[in-house]
Length: 292
Ligand code: SF4
Ligand code: SF4
Image (cartoon, rainbow, N blue to C red; front, top):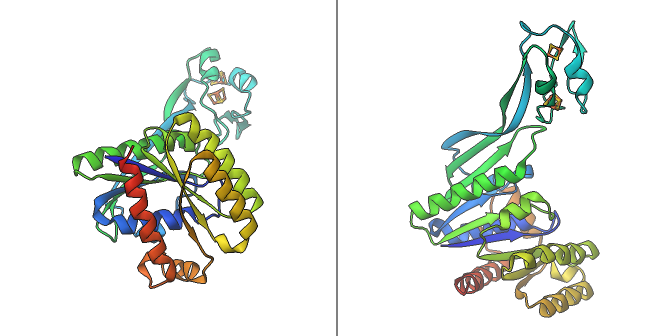
């Protein structure tokens, strides 16, 4: 099984639209994983049916038993996050401020505080419009630990791919280089980088590739909107050559991309000139991934 992770290093490059296009081209050959859990939106293009939902728990949250609490205020004094205010004549935990460190529980003289598992979101297993399985998630408002949620989404997608005998897992990774990206990368067979010819596009491409290099994973690159800045595109190609990154395809700017999105479609579901470029890129990705 080959796990193909699509990353961008920055938001706004067209990563998710391109990942969804690859997922549509792969059809039922692949299990799709939306690991951009902090801003998940691949479901808008893949139209999953949210068939199975399960709660995701991560970290802990303090809870005060008011029947035992003597209102000594010790817990409130030691909490560095000001998560236990005295309100309405009682000490209560503010779930948005509590970091789950457990210090308040240690100091409470009456054992009124217990640590509960914190619900952070949902994981979904769906059937998509192209008859593939998709694993995706929704993080609750203010919830953290998205790296753990990414790991959960990925491991579920791999498990399903093995069970269904699928050859590919296509992963939409998070932008940036933080914990969710590192979590997306672990176990990857091949990375597809999506960039654009701007100053920040090249800077963030270099930055994300410095992370990928540490994992020793081979990578290819799609340059989106290559014609908006030919000079910057040249600089990106020089960087790709220097680092031995396969230049998969350059895609011109085309309003058809946006028009397709407004109809909840990927560009490969339209008759745009870009479709064939992405079909060629997908064939190249399959070839490259097979080598690893
Ligand atoms: S330390 Fe325990 S007893 Fe004291 S206010 Fe907090 S919960 Fe109540
Ligand atoms: S678990 Fe830590 S962060 Fe949460 S209320 Fe207790 S001391 Fe504060």
